[in-house]
Length: 151
Image (cartoon, rainbow, N blue to C red; front, side, top):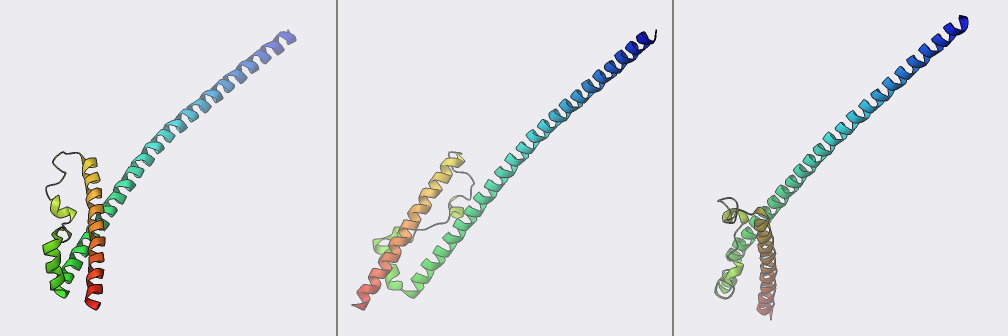
């Protein structure tokens, strides 16, 4: 009888161990699932933060461009006051250099007619590049005019 009691005790102990092991496995699995769910949430939050940072950078770039435009317009105004003869020359022979408008003046109505922001950005980039090239050309003209005055 003692052997049967020992066997029963051993069986009960083994069953208890199996139940504990199974519960531990279930808890580990639940913790893993929870961690995976948190990782997904973290990834989504990181993506949202990255998008926000990109938008902030775009806003900063637009503001910097707008500031450059305003500075360029002020320089053109100073040029007209400082050297009206040269300004008249530009008006007569290369008026496109003086017809420089900022982005805000062109887009007060919002997004361009096509409604495609990406195309508008590409056009703005092209316009900014053209304006920059025009500015370089104007500076070269000023240098040439100054050289001509000096000779």
